[in-house]
Image (cartoon, rainbow, N blue to C red):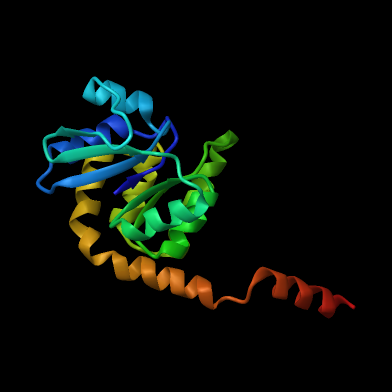
Length: 183
C-alpha cells in the first residue's frame, strides 16, 4: 500500500484499523507525508527504509520520488492512497485500486468533486464510503472493513475505469474540433 495524503486525513484511525486487522500490510509513505501522524502512532519517526511494526502493520518511509519513480511505485502497489489532483490522475493511469483525498475547499466543494468522481467510477458502496470517510465524512473503521473485504475484487473495476478514460479522445483534439465547429 502507498500512502500519500493531506495531514487532515484520519491517518491514526486507519493505521489502528490496519494494525488490528486480520491481514498483514506493508505501507510505504513518502518522506514528509504524514510524519506527525506516524510519530504519534508509533512514538518514533523512522529514517527512510527503516520499518516500524505494530500488529499486522509495517510502515516504511520512502524518499520523496520524482514523477517517474512515483508512477512506478503506484503501479507496483495493491492499493494507493492519493491526494489532490496530480497523484489522483497518476493513480488513474496506474489502474490499481486507490483511495482519493481531494484537497479541502471552501463550502465543501471538495466533497462535491469527490461525489462526482465516485458517481463516474461506480465502484460501489464500500469504495464510496471509504473515500468519503477518508475525506472527513463518515466513520473510517467500518468503511475500511467493508472496503478491505471487497479489495480483492476491485482491481478489475479500477482497470476498466482507466481503460474507459484511455479510449476518450484527447483534450487537444477535442479543443480543435470544438473550435473548428465554431468557424
